[in-house]
Image (cartoon, rainbow, N blue to C red; front, side, top):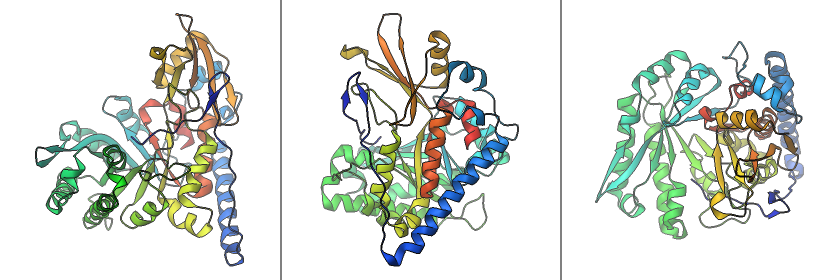
Length: 418
């Protein structure tokens, strides 16, 4: 995954994202375009809120004043019409093999998604050759059921684990990698793939080399072009799609960051960019999972302040929303750090400790404290209807889609928001 960003800690080791403000370009030649963009976004947000209030049994729970009683009583309740979409921009949902609940939710809420991405494949080096591993993970029966249940496209994720020296250094190997991926899509009837490679290339350190960086970008473009040359089995007249995973860039762009120029370079060849706007905090710096102001900064870094650029590229951004949380130990013991929790873990903590939920207005997230059986104090950040709603509104205000990691880790009533 991409390099994580950590906020400074202080006091009780709570993090705060730096505040930012969005400034619109006021050049006279663009005023009408920018005004139209703003008004359109406001109308979209108002419409979203109205539709959600009219159709969701959870709408009264979208509040900063969340409490254990309501969450425990209502988390499994969803609208009777689970096929109605409230978020009209693209919605990609990830499904992991190690969390089977995601497979069931993908079938149940199929109509809420435009894209579904099971985590199945790795492209690896095998001596001087390349192999695509993961078909044994693919569940043909599940794929068949999904196709009957709704219109969501199936784009399994492929992680490039192969050494960049093997993969990118020779044209023959680049072509071999692309052929392996395209052939798998054809044989399995996929609608394309989600590709994750940038974080791997950053880890190998190749992005500091201009020539290797250019080869990396050219590989993604070549793969996108190859997929676009193949027609989808699901939708007549549509080609196979490529979604590319990118991490959030640093405020001061580093050589390893995927920045705005890279976004423009790949914009024609890539159908969507899955932006990993989560994992802001970690056990060494406990705090919120994805502060709202940080998300705003990331979007501004990638899309700029120009209405022209935002309108042309924003629809391809799939803003990352986490359906998992974190349980951090506040002990100074280095071994006590804590880590990720999913919905069932969160509910178990609420039932056991009955904590008072607090709202952090700076990050736009709910959290609570508890003390475990070893008398160690913890802080827990986990998504709420309110925190997710705010992130959907932010994405909508830019005209972005969303990508959810991952759907099996959330609570059922989260899907009423989608």
